[in-house]
Length: 211
Image (cartoon, rainbow, N blue to C red; front, side, top):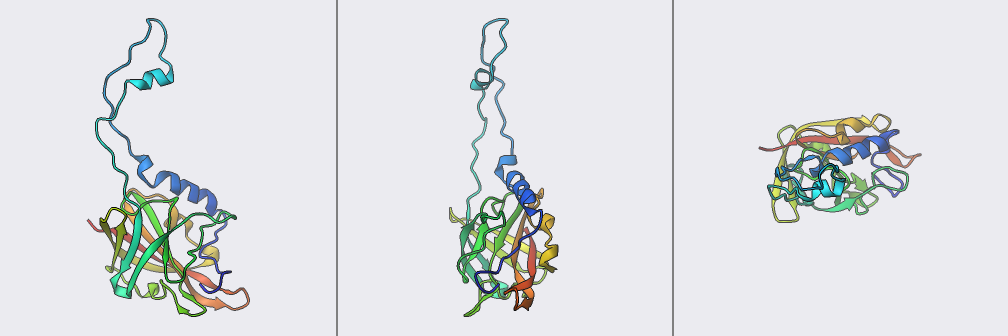
């Protein structure tokens, strides 16, 4: 992507799917066990919602998956911190604001949770190559390491690299929730449209978590 006008992926109809992915991909989808203790109530009177729930408690502790703060891809020489990305005013995913730094789509899945975690980066700038300039060089079996805020890390293995025209961006495959932890790395690619000031395609790396 070159210039401030270049968008990573603006897809018609994508907003609803992004909302779905954000709601189903992460930790909110897990159930916690509860005790069998039942609160007492006056005979003949049904328990109200707050009263009925007051006697229940989780039988196990729950720790949310730490947020990602760094991405490293040895095969293509990437070692970048991660900015948090949200949505732009038009409902599309925000672009990273720095050419040399990738960004994680924070309303979506955290890497390591079931679902598709999405990391975006520019391919180039007016000054030269950007953080994901060599993304298209990745091959099946290449490793992607994600460092997290608590000092832990999680590794993903690239399964495939694909290029799609921007008007046929695979929203379902990139953002739709999955049952297992997955990672999507997205940048621009293909031919550059000098009139529009942007690339005509997106390059996407699809990866799954290493067990």
